[in-house]
Amino acid sequence: MELNSKKMLILVEEMFNVFEFWYPYYRLKEAGAEVTVVGSGRAEEFTGKPATQVRPDINADQVSAEDYDGIIIPGGYAPDMMRRYPAMVQLVKDLFDAGKVVAAICHAGWMLASANILEGRKATSFFSIKDDMIHAGALWMDESVVVDGNLITSRKPDDLPNFMKAVIAALK
Image (cartoon, rainbow, N blue to C red; front, side, top):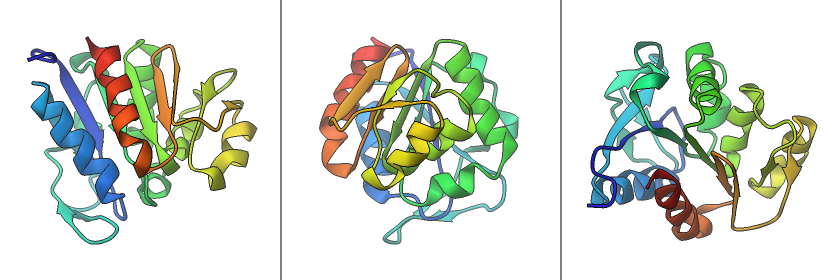
């Protein structure tokens, strides 16, 4: 399969968008990647919006960026919870600084802002956090998917097919 030997992380916290979590999760597995779900450590299980549960495999403070090829950050309101946990924010920054794939969709731009990795980078997000992205230094674009080096961003669930094509292409 196209992503055999690739190891990916997906972050999870309360109120994650179920489409933005499950679509990348299964698409990566289908492509042959090993997928590890990373939680904040606050709970053993997190509920998405609108109501499916996910149990993380590991907590953010137990993960090293050097062991993975990239990370997916789903949206929903979960990124606002994720950014409250320094280990989650640091994991995103470490992967980004190592040149590994950092892919964020919808409200996940909040995590990119908290990781301080948007300065001068082209990016997109859900329209309601456009100002947050710009204030964090992003060159915001209203496009289905924006790829700027190792940073891949999309706006909303409707963009998931293009988002995941870009993620898989970047991992090949």
